[in-house]
Amino acid sequence: MPSNQAPVLALAPELTDEQVARFKSRLQEQALALSEQDGELRARLAAEESVTANTFVAGIEGAMAAEADDEVIALLHHEQTELAATRQALERIENGEYGFCTECGDPIGAARLEVLPQAHLCVGCQDMLEHRQGR
Ligand SMILES: [Zn+2]
Image 1: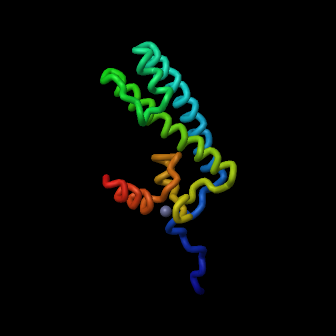
Image 2 (image 1 turned 90 degrees about the vertical axis):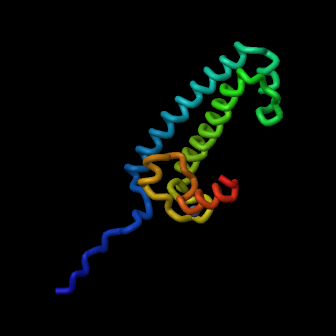
Image 3 (image 1 turned 45 degrees about the vertical axis):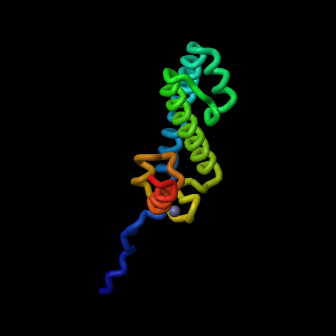
């Protein structure tokens, strides 16, 4: 009797519909929470010096912000990055591209997405990117 049972997949190459649905609702919740945070942070900024708020509107990068606002701006910047990543992940779900590395096309892996549902790079590409950025 040859044992020709289907091999256990070592790499779980694709996500099940159920997994994608679960990641999708997590991403939607995350996007909502981030938008709320965005509103709060902007309100905090606006409540502080209006000069700083105005420079912020002109762009985080060029803003010479008062030290007191640095933290809020850093949070806002981080939050916007996260929100963009979350929205892009939701778009990739709609396009059926979710779960694959946008750099090399390899599956990102359910375990990684479990930790970071908005991840768009596999571990290998993420590492390379961080090395390129000198971190
Ligand atoms: Zn990759």
